[in-house]
Image (cartoon, rainbow, N blue to C red; front, side, top):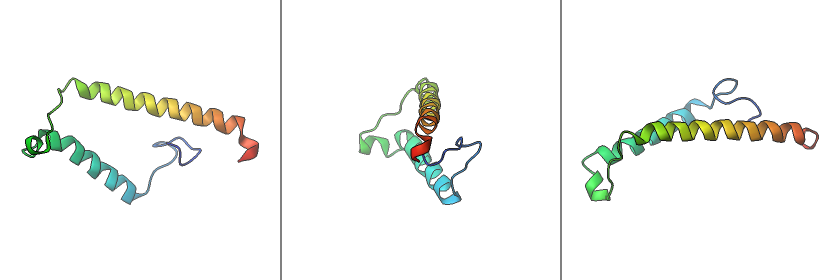
Length: 80
């Protein structure tokens, strides 16, 4: 969200290795609580009603970060 002045996902994309590693880590993080290893790791699967809240929270974070970044660039453009 902060690596460029452009709008992430629309005007700017991360490199392929960054995208692949992000998807891989997210997949492992989502799979582990539902896997047979969950008990050994002391994990418990979250209810499915959690995931819409997670998506909403991440979307709100992205919007807020983009808004603050845009304000910051407008405010301190001469210093950059």
